[in-house]
Amino acid sequence: MKSMRPENESGDLIVAKKLTKKYSDVVALDGLDLTLRRGEIVGLLGPNGAGKTTAIHMLVGLLEPTSGEASVLGMSPLRQRHEIAKRSNFSSAYVQLPSNLTVGENMRIYAMLYGVRDAKKKIAELLELFEIADLTKRATGKLSSGEKTRVNLAKCLLNDPELLLLDEPTASLDPEMADTVRKTLRGIQRDKGIGILYTSHNMPEVEELCNRILFIHEGRLVTQGTPVEVMKNFQSGNLEQVFIKIVRRGDFVVKA
Amino acid sequence: MVLRYVYLHKRSLPRSLEIVFWPVMELFVWGFVAMHIRASAGDALAAMASSLINAMIFWDLLYRSQQGVSVSVVEDIWTQNIVNLLVSPLKIWEWMLATFLYGTLKTLLIVVILTALALAMYEFNLVSTLQFYLIPLGACLLLFGWALGLFTSALVIRWGHAAEALIWGVPFLIQPFSAIFYPVSALPEWLRPLALALPSTYVFEGMREVIRTGTMPLGHLAAAAVLDVVYFALAALFFAWMHRQARRSGRLGRLGVD
Image (cartoon, rainbow over all chains, first blue to last red):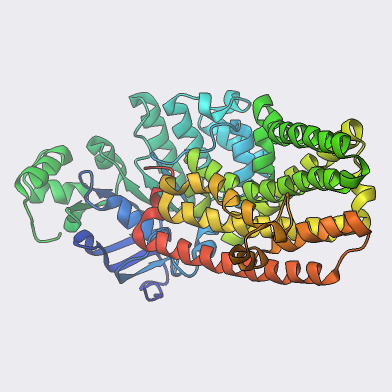
């Protein structure tokens, strides 16, 4: 995969062109074009197996593309992964922190891994922000799924990242806590201008949070645009209806 | 990362006890066998009795050194944390170095405990028996253990859960051929080239020579060291290759998730 310079020196955190991944006779992702600008939240949507996680894994350097190009923070995810990692962070509903360490220990370890200065203060701030300060001494394995999610998100913000890649970050949260997390993410995006690539099956959340969305189905980009544009193109009142139309009828439209 | 592994023991008594439980049990078995031989055969086989206890402690050093690397890697797979590590700024060589250091700490602790127990229970003094040679012989086994640990970790990175049994099995593949409890001459002739291809063989043969004569054949030490470097380099290359394969096949991102 070629290393690319960002097309736009002033803003693009992610630039992916024709990103493709094939496994034998299965095409997991087929020619995805994606950009994420600074200060933007882009939703990557699609049913299970659509290719969302495949795309994110290629952008964090966990997966080698079959073809195509990707640039993250102006660098190659395969050859400069460590430099990218210092300035970005990742969270997934399918990845956990060590269950046999306490919340405080996990945060401390990751603060050290990310080279966070004044780690104690930063950890305290983040645990307060996500309302989990009272869980510092509790083993992570003994937390509820919602509490674990909040700890994962707190860990994600340790290094003040410029870019966040979040794979279903609110999957285990109750509506009230999910709303709190969304507000927190929006606040951070606004205050610090970070870019967020966000996958979710929660369509109302995506409508509320994302500046733009890309919809993938069976590895291919079906449509993209702002949530309003996409709903208009599909003559639907909400993104959930768009989701169902695309998956059930395989509707394809000219990309917005 | 060393801190991450040390934290595991802070509040888990079973995990902390497990470090010493198996080695101590093995020492009891081999120690009593050695005492029985000494009592039955007298001075004639006293050296053999010492060799058995020494060999047991050294075998544990090798085994624990390998386990220290592999189990640390698998720990992060079991806890579904490995992807967090793989997307962090942590470099693979830094991670492996942490497992070497952590494994060494555990191994040293075990060796100290076993040495003290052997002295107390069987009047066998590892330090005075091997003297200075304890350090280079121990270092050779440690390095070979790291190489085996890298190899088994690489298999798990590439094939996931399916390869985990090899973590515990691979050391026992080399055990019969490393002349641990018997000399190379006890092996059938057609197996001796295999034994002589392993650095551990030279360590254990050298150990027996020191116990018998008080001097270490430097050729044995040199052979062990050179083979260690070769095996370590091969293991590191194999690990890098398996890591790349896992990144291509998609296995890397699914470790701990599948």
